[in-house]
Image (cartoon, rainbow, N blue to C red; front, side, top):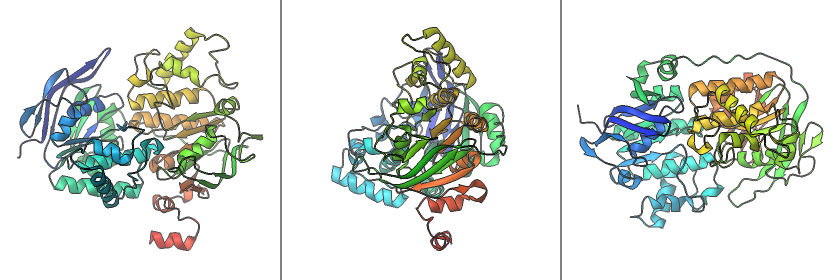
Length: 511
């Protein structure tokens, strides 16, 4: 047996009111792909940040290649062969992709880093433009930048936090091939994912955390999804209950929507036709950066440049209406960016609840000249309980929650408003299996209550589970809808390349 690449003993980290890690021990061998599994708030991200030097532990010790080490910051981690891809990205918005990567590779020139990015992007099939400012990128494109930046450091230990959440099935296969090659060369990989089938396919060791403590160590290849769920949350996630029902009137119609990009790195929307009826869930699949952001801005009202008549809610032309006016008509919206658009980081959960609850349909209302503070906090506490949000109460700041718990609160906030049209982007990104099952069940309950639901997601498994019909968006164009009974992963994967117009062309690619 070779000495461990990484060994943690007794790692403890506490914050006011919560112990994130409690006496955690973990051993990772050279060339091992080691999963860290746990529900949202279990302490996984805190533990990874301790290994990467972004957080200092209160107690415990870290050994790297058999030697005790104190990693005081990420720069020291990288100098010792440790790289990390964060779930919440560490990128400077006003700098280009190449400049962001160059910050961690200062021994090379910017031109050399740019060339390296292009080479890695081609090698791994990750579409990245090194000259683009980060603020013009979608969430999926930012994740690709983080993955390439980590790979360019030639790590001995690579930490990946939800790396496949915005990749196509084909890109996931290619990433797995890359990771398996890295492992065969001796690189150790710490892999965090809520996709249990990925962990079972890729990893050969697994440490399970629950409430900050290690509750089990196993070989995931010898486990089932059900047994891993039991280790992680103490039970199997409930099976989604679907029932067939007739659809009602069209709640959203998009007619030949054409919008030129607002910046040079955006995507032009080209003749988008879309309809969502009461009592159905319509999904939009696609690789990040193919027009999802532009389409969602046009639907939410953040972009009001659409031609008259191109976006309608029921019989009302909303093309030029701002988000508040659309909300009064019954539209509630969950963006993919949790912090900054979905919630204000420095405001409490109760205050964030108020932000989208002033429309005519939303009930109850908490403001009308005066803010009803007691009622607002009471209702926020009810949401926290109903959606199993792990938080320090209604006064907890949004930024203090884990990504998955903040997502549960935001989705719960908008569902609770009783929308007639609900648009949600990446509803379960970074959310554990139990919470994902709950969010998907709530979406189906909305549908069954007569709400029209539009889901934009890069999780094909999710779309196949909850949608009645499915579109694919590619290069600013939207495919025809396909009933889920006729959809296959292979077909949708081909459509993600824009190949849906001609049957012969699609058949050729599939062959």
